[in-house]
Length: 96
Image 1 (tube, rainbow, N blue to C red):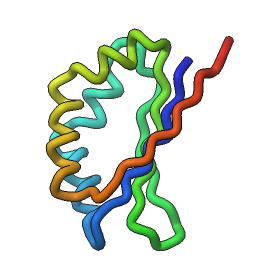
Image 2 (image 1 turned 90 degrees about the vertical axis):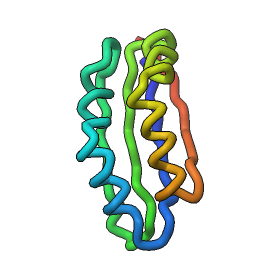
Image 3 (image 1 turned 90 degrees about the horizontal axis):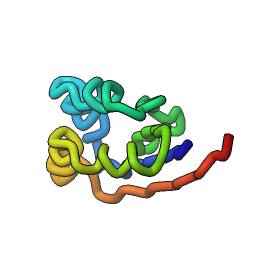
Image 4 (image 1 turned 120 degrees about the horizontal axis):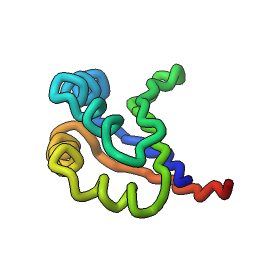
């Protein structure tokens, strides 16, 4: 299993709009519906930062690679241009 912690460093005051856009376009649901997806959930920190945390779990590297080729994944990249200054990705491989 592959686990990704994706931290979006959102532009000041844009975190809620970014998350609302993701939900409005159904990107989160489309990602959850992908074959090999185990978890795809967003979290808002309580520390007052502009960060948005996405925790993803994928069955294997093939499922994650397929995810990166989806239209909704590409759309998320387009949305990030307007709302996000930086993206930090932590990747963990969990053996069964």
